[in-house]
Length: 445
Image (cartoon, rainbow, N blue to C red; front, side):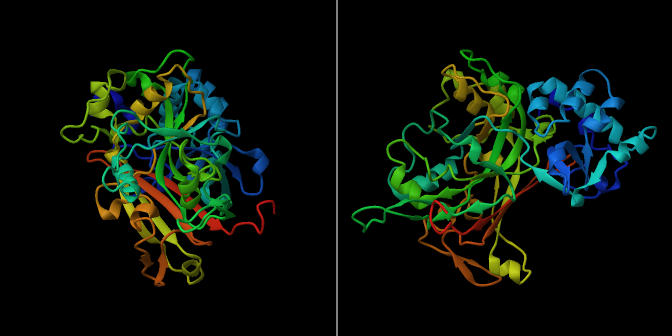
């Protein structure tokens, strides 16, 4: 790990006067301080930016009078109903704010607790909203394990296409499809064509899937005509979030050739309400996963030695499923998989460098999905497409003996994550949850 990324806000000895932040395994200890947009329940018009601490959320703008300089400017930007104004200030402003909030919330700070306590709200009494107004959405395909598993279903003898190990493959998605976890989700309509059908039909998707992903939010914008170097890419990452890219596999199978995903992906993408800042993630940066012997080296514009040494990110992500019957019987969700973002073939920095390599710019609020994060083992597969081998091998929900090849109406999928490293306090990522509703009676209904 590069010691220059670590500062006083990561000190494992830090404790907060907010007692719940000090509990073992807390998602939001003082070393985390993730951002979200919240409103007191029933007052959605008063949404503003907050920071999670224990089981509370801090109204950041309310703390501005206690701050000065760049930190105060950043806190005032948090009066908005999205994080975009804060993100546009760049990582220096976010870092200054983080340092001051860490100081104000630390156990050693006593003078201003009464004022700060008035800016705290129990998470149980607030609503969490979409944290960022997303301007552009790009979804990558950065897990070689997922790419291999998915490719093997269609091309058993050559699962990876020739370009995969040279270029971070991606497609452009629909920014207005992005919604906060928990927002309504409906089964989409589309063209479907089974192998034994002479022509497609227009019907609700039957092979609805989830995808375990991370979403990277762009803070400071880049400039048109000036591609980002891999070494500079993290300067433009404000933070990272859990992301579920819902996918209609049967619509996708019919429409994707020759131009790639379209309506199979554009109906919904869920993101967690919590954004973990780039700075909070510093202790969990690590070397990129080793490439297989014989793999080509990245082309020069996609290679940076420091990024190879520190461009990976350790995030354990679980996908859980809870059927409508399980909820009715008050049964817990079943874990389907557990994968780690450290296995990705392409780094976040490489994704940003590639995205801008033709001269196009990234804007504040742009969202980049990592693509499905799968590991090398059967318990680390990040989609039902992989878990059921394209629907050929149904899985069983142990509590109710229900079987699944793809999602049924009423199924609730939840992504949860945690980052741990010896010598540091672990942090949680909150959760990203979506429940699949039935298709409308007609697509215009």
